[in-house]
Amino acid sequence: MMAKHRPIALLIASLLVPPTAFAGELSDALRMADAGDTMAGPILLGLVTNGQASINGLNGHLIPIAFGKLKYGPAAPILAKYLSAPVPEFAGPHEYTVGRTLDALAEIGDASVTNAVQQYLDSGIPPRLQTAARRVLLQLTEADPVPGLLDLLDKETYEPERSDIIEALAKHKDQRVLKRLSEIAAESDSAFMRRAAIFGLRQIGDKQSLLALASLLDLTFSKNLKAEWGWKGKPDFRTYFPDTISMCLRQCTKQDFGTNRAQWEKWIKGNIEQGGAANGSQPIRSETNSTSSAAGSRR
Image (cartoon, rainbow, N blue to C red; front, side, top):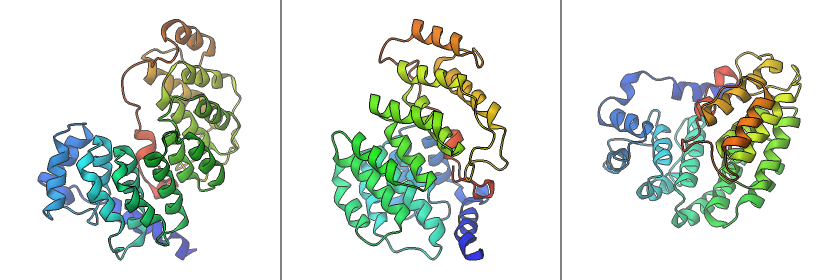
């Protein structure tokens, strides 16, 4: 058991660091990136290339996260190079950082790094990272990555990676994606996967996905759903999920009809055009982006 939990302990140690760990320019640049300030991109890149900051450093995973959020193209070669860097002593944090680096490459979408990602995939990496690399390669190389991502989702069993695949699928306003996420949200025996699918529908944010969310309000959620990931303490899913769905609808529409499906559907049908989004804001991702192994969740 101790061997099983050692990487988790290392990951917690890498994440729980004092604020002084990012004093000065790096701290300022990361705050700018978190706020969406595009000026953070060249500042961060300069700090990394001149050696003042390192993705291998303490809390270095925040650097690829920042580049990915900014979709900062000039950082792609640096991120790709990190994939072939020597593995640090603490493999647990390194694996997490590689995952965030792969995510950033997918967000940036620079196909010039495809060979580097493929070489990384072929280098004997752990199975979980293999799926992550394949997910990124599909997004970098396929004009229509949806079929490949759906196939990857069906084959993958590790729920945090399945959640990442759902997030990648949710970038596409596509009936195939809508159907699959609606099925998971309504039928999965895993509370974590249901939540990931609900957040995916919110991320899509168009008329059909919002109607799909509203339709879930009529479901009776079992309090005995599997919850291996996602919560410190298991909530009562009979109330948690209707409240979460209502929250997602409020965030997308700036309206509030509680858990009343009929009122939500009436407003959505009357105020959102087919294929249109409820608003132009980016999806709120704070619920799924924090990592806390102590909480029993990767997200």
